[in-house]
Amino acid sequence: PTAKIRLHICNLIFAVGEILMLILPIDYTVHGRVVYSFGPSTLIAYLLCGIYIISTIVTTLIYRKQMPGRRFTAMLLWQGLWMLAAVIQFIKPELLLVGFASSFGMVILYIQLENPSEYVDGSTGLFTTNALSVYVHDKYRFGKSFSMFTAKIHFLTDYVDYNMEHDAVIRTAKALVALGPEPAFRIDDDTFCVLYDDKERMFEKAANIKKQKDNVRDIPAKGTYLLIPDSLKMNGPDEFFRFLHTYLESEQEIVVANDVLIDKLRYQTGIKELIDEALRTDRVEVFYQPFYNVKDSCFNVAEALVRIRRENGEIVPPAEFIPVAEETGQIIMLGIRVFEKVCEFLSKGEAKRLGLDQIEINVSAAQFDHDNPAAFVMENINKYHIDPGQINLEITETAAARNIDIMLMNMNRLIEKGVSFSLDDFGTGRSNIDYFVNMPVKTIKFDHTFIRGFFDNDKIRHVMTGMVDIMHKIGMSVVAEGIETFDQMNVIKDMGVEFIQGYYYSKPVPEDEFIAFLKNNNSPGL
Ligand code: C2E
Ligand code: CA
Ligand code: CA
Image (cartoon, rainbow, N blue to C red; front, side, top):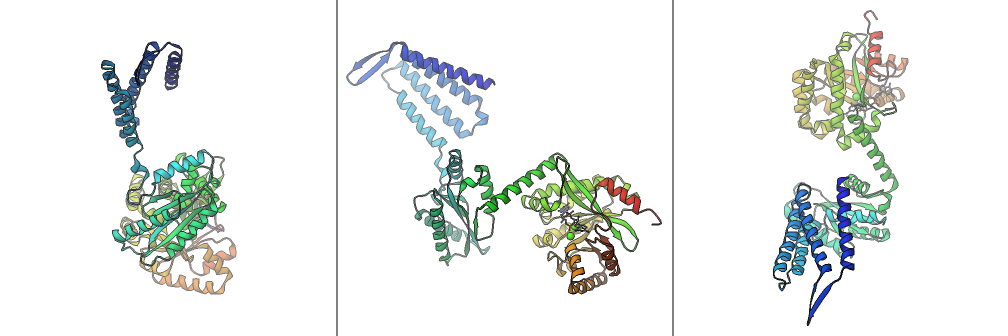
């Protein structure tokens, strides 16, 4: 409010000043081509200029922390120079310095603020991302549609030297400029775009560029193209740039921004916000699903499965948000939260008293890229005073495929402390023999899709029976997932698996229901 009042006062001063300048008398003398004005009106003009310059200098000094250094020096230099010139001219009126100083100041301002290198890329002469940002914001502000294509260079080998890269970049830039007068931008080391007013022209030019690229044989690179025919399909610059950011990463050769992709982006953005919100307001929950231990006829192991509760109490299943979380990196925070919740639950000791030995926690591939997952797991185990033997981590082949060395290092560190591992989703193509032979896992989980196949397909039945046999021979135990009926349970039990997990026994349930389940089903003598 004070800033607003200050603004109004300034406006008032200037309005009054301008009016006074208009109505007060002004005198002037003419000597040939020289005009010299004086009198009350001119005095007011001097006064206004003085106020203006001094208040600008004061404001600049007050707000120096909020403005980029370049702008700060430019403002001070310009205003200082102006004032100095005015003082000198006041003393020696025949030195007509003021006009000169103010135009000189303008040049300083232009060079300092409109730093051309911010908008033009030095090595290609194309516009930069900053320029694109200004351009796109302007177009949206005036509700004008534009079309755009981007081209990205992907080198097909890791052995790219600087010259080759430079050559590819320069040739691409030249080809883009040769296409026509429309503005071309270099928006990343290897990514370029051109903007058009008309989508037909954009398609035509994009096809032209692709054809030129396809004829280049001496650079081991391929191009991917992202086409946005109508910018107004996105609801503003934020969505536009989010779209770019998301789909520029695509390995697909040609991606066209259509309603399907934009809807997908919006859905993902919604889910991303949902996850952030759930983390912030503690609406991430962990449900537990018990495994039936065939040999001991009890439920001594359970899987922790994450849920998000919407504000209205509705539960969002992980299938809706885990894939998004994996893409956005939120899986790290989510995984940490799940782990803490499980530790907290275990630290109460009640589940253990009711016969629960171990909880299995799902770990996504991305969680192993995180700097040191092993340290984090141990930290929490220590913080909550939990026996590491109570924790089992379920991993998938995808995790191993990403970075097997880091993964093995982390696994071994944890195994040393007593944490164990299972291989999840076996039979989905996400796990193969290689992994369970070479990975330090002691349990294999047959995915429920595989179990479905078991009941529908003779071949799968033989494969699975054989697999279970092999796994037992190499000292591993087996969990069968997704058992829903009494008949299924019986057939699977006869196959000799150690654990059975499925709706037949219990769906994943909240903590209190899970405790109730253990009370009802793990009583001695059952
Ligand atoms: P998953 O690891 O394969 O987990 C088993 C899924 O099968 C669970 O789905 C479970 O509810 C479901 N299921 C169990 N028994 C039956 C049954 O008898 N019939 C049927 N039709 N389904 C059954 P949910 O809870 O929806 O979890 C889906 C996936 O989300 C999990 O698949 C897992 O990959 C992922 N996930 C869940 N929680 C976490 C977590 O905390 N972290 C990570 N990274 N992923 C998680
Ligand atoms: Ca699992
Ligand atoms: Ca599974």
